[in-house]
Image (cartoon, rainbow, N blue to C red; front, top):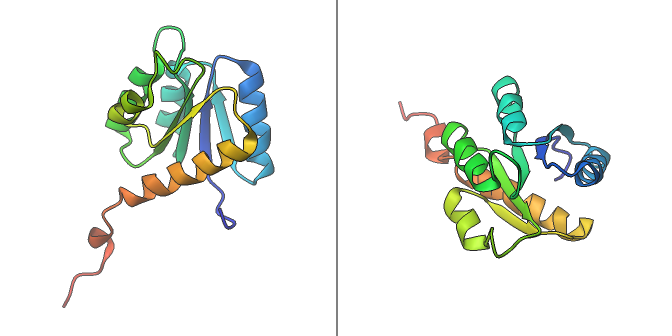
Amino acid sequence: MQGKRLHVVVIDDDPEIVAALSAFLCGEGHHVRTGANGHDGLIILQNEAADLVITDGEMAEMDGFEFIARVRGRYPKIGIILMTAHEGRYPLAQALKHGADGYITKPFSLKKFSLIFQKSYWAALDRVDWWDALPEAE
């Protein structure tokens, strides 16, 4: 990411996945916050700005689709990646429809994850209307 330190939220009820992604992302120089479910993720996002959210599809109480919809509704410019081991229950088309920028099936390699991570971050940046950022003509 060319030196840009991102603020990333990782949400998964599997502590091994959380630990592996956190170690990888921190090793790349990013700031990482973690949670075990969608409620944790929403609390983190209320208290801290984030550039990207990585969430599991299957979680107790609030599944990944509901979590994505809530995040997208409240924080429209955040990049979102959905991870799933259950493609049948959480297909790519539905993930995109609910607002995900990226999608990855478990298990995955860190190389593949890195590609999805970068693509999703840039997709989130593209949502910014850069015309609004231009100074007005005098």
